Amino acid sequence: MRTQVAIIGAGPAGLLLGQLLYRAGIANIILERQSADHVLGRIRAGVLEQVTVDLMDECGVGERLHREGLVHQGIELLFKGARHRIDFPGLTGGKTVMVYGQTEVTRDLMAARAAEGLPTVYEVGDSVSLHGFDGTSPQVRYRHGGVERQVDCEFIAGCDGFHGVSRASVPKGAIHEYEKVYPFGWLGLLADVPPVFHELIYAHTERGFALCSMRSPARSRYYLQVPLEERAEQWTDERFWAELRARLDPQARERLVTGPSIEKSIAPLRSFVAEPMRFGRLFLAGDAAHIVPPTGAKGLNLAASDVKYLAAGLIEQYRERSAAGLDHYSERALRRIWRAERFSWWFTMLMHKFPGTGEFDRKVQEAELDYLVHSRAASTALAENYVGLPL
Ligand code: RFL
Ligand code: PHB
Image: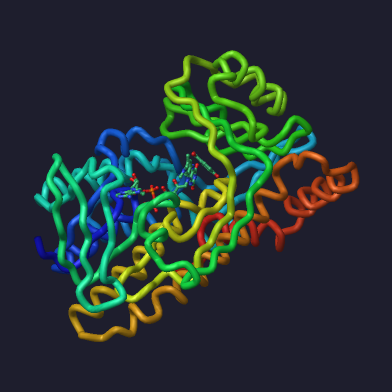
């Protein structure tokens, strides 16, 4: 078949891009390794910046998000047994964030794509290969239902996540990778119990970091910092709840409602950037080009801003025959990415317990937290990064 843009990956980046291009009259196909149910079964991010909410609206899929999403006006930082609130609107001139799960973002985008009858091929496994993107007529080959197929296109968008084929298809030496791996992971648990508090609690404790998040007034998402060697199977629900309780302040401990888990998994923490994000007619977007540790809740939001820039560049190319937007895509996206990388790294270093660090480092961490919540300037810096820097 022939199309204008071949999109690899039906995560948030690929689905958002497909929708923006379709609405601009640009034909596209999405090829996805997994089944739609598998993609929807992955529990990931939960906090949307206004930029991401606006993009969902632009895609015409914001209706349920505005109905069911929870507007959050702040977060709480817990350290030395006490909680301190960071007031977003007060510090940022009225800005807030929206709590709405990545699963729901993906579900809404998939439904819109299906309703328009746009081509999406699921379950292509590892069969995708990219060709000719250094010339003018790229091709994507894949296998589906035992049949080899080829897509002739004008551009390829690599939206296939950290382990995808797109970045791996770029010749070695044409790409520079920056990486930092953290010596712990996050054990996440999802349960149909009311959240312990109506806002998110980020807890720095002697036992390690904990995060109290949510998906709705009836569904909670909790995380615990755990050593990298741990397996989710080693954590019974009882063990998880006991450890979470031990990392909370007395009031939250008392209010915590526990129940059976729906999902439990461990994610490693990593910072990663690949530069540049363009190779001829192949463009990388989202986790395919960069990873942030989840502490700042930036992963999904960065995927959305990449896509906003990339869609603008492609639309300019097709409408005005101008390559300026595409030529600036990588540089423009990377500027926002590096600022989010810095914030996510800083918040991760501040909130976690680092194995092997001495008493001095721990005292400095506590002093920084104390400064952070008592200095308006420092609180503002946290708030403006958390709600999202301007595009
Ligand atoms: P995704 O969501 O990984 O989607 C990429 C899609 O590409 C498919 N794919 C392929 N398709 C065809 N051919 C191939 N060869 C392919 N290889 C892969 C994959 O099946 C997948 O469907 O990337 P995208 O769209 O860039 O979106 C980015 C976000 O998903 C990501 O930044 C966040 O979810 C990161 N993240 C979190 N971010 C937060 O802000 N808060 C969190 O709590 C949070 N938790 C997480 C996370 C990422 C995780 N991963 C990637 C391990 C928890 C986990 C476990
Ligand atoms: C989540 O709800 O999954 C979540 C929220 C905030 C974060 C990370 C994850 O910083």
